[in-house]
Length: 104
Image 1: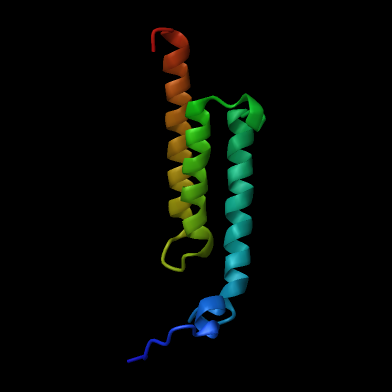
Image 2: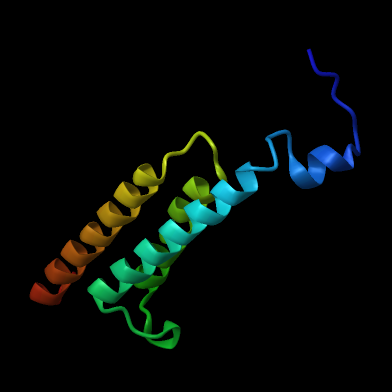
């Protein structure tokens, strides 16, 4: 059993995983970044100044969903991709419904 030490700077800055995991983090980050950019391009999102409140909430959801697979060893990249794709599809459906019925 590993004794916990406060202010263990090795643990604080590098964690307890092998240093090789840093390369995996780079790889995971590149995959999630590219996929997110492609998905946003596909959705045709505008600049930040033109985002509605609903779209801003979606961007925040994206950030949360994309971050975990980037650095979490227990979160597969495909899970993050499924989450942000689902959020994007729900956003597209919500926009379609709102545009068809102005009362919403």
